[in-house]
Image (cartoon, rainbow, N blue to C red):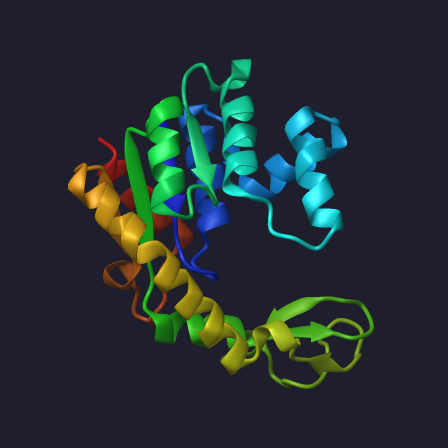
Length: 214
């Protein structure tokens, strides 16, 4: 089966993608991993991408698409793939349809207010680098393991998270329309899977994803 996973920052997309790809026995291909692998292996597209990255420029669509084409041609993709982080635009989606069109597109839908609570609640220990969530801490300022000071990273501040979510929505809305028109979109409404404490269990989300693909 050939799948694409869409989901905002903090939705647990990477965890679910890893579980579903293992269950279906297809490779989980994240854009970041694909770039790192192509660059470390010195492939032609990897070297070209590195030139742009070293110059502090965005890697052009044509190079990204060539890299995806290169990756999907590998033997482990013979029975399908799970793409995470690609496509990001309708143009990339159209290019993917010409390479190896997906069978289904899974969108993990989590309300923004829940994502804000989840992501802005993260704290990092300055001493041991441990990561915690304030909902599980008795003292929000002291590391429960080493006693070091807990801080909120700039990346986890409300204004930063809100901007990241807005970028995701602006970028993804056209893609969602594109795949809806093809009748390939499978929306997983995480809020509907919430338990009494207001959050959803990863195993319930996993089951919902598999059920949507049947």
